[in-house]
Length: 73
Image (cartoon, rainbow, N blue to C red):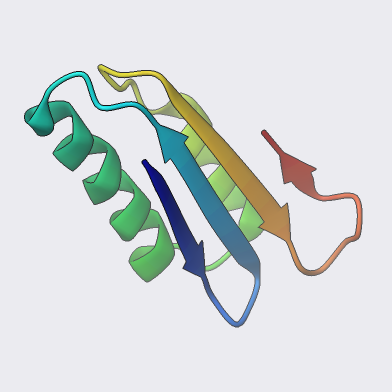
C-alpha cells in the first residue's frame, strides 16, 4: 500500500508498507495521520517517524521544504 501526505510546509511524507494483518495497517496510518496533522517541523516529524516502534515493515520518505538536503528514507 502507498499513501501520500502533503502539507503546504514544512514537509511532505510518503508511506510505503505491506500490511501483514489489517490491524497493523491501521497502526501505521494512525501514526502517519498524527504526524501530518499535529507536527509542525521537519525535525519533529523525523523524530516521531524514526523513534516510534511499529509492528510491520514501513518505508517512510520524508522531504523537507526549507533545505534542499533535508530528506530521509
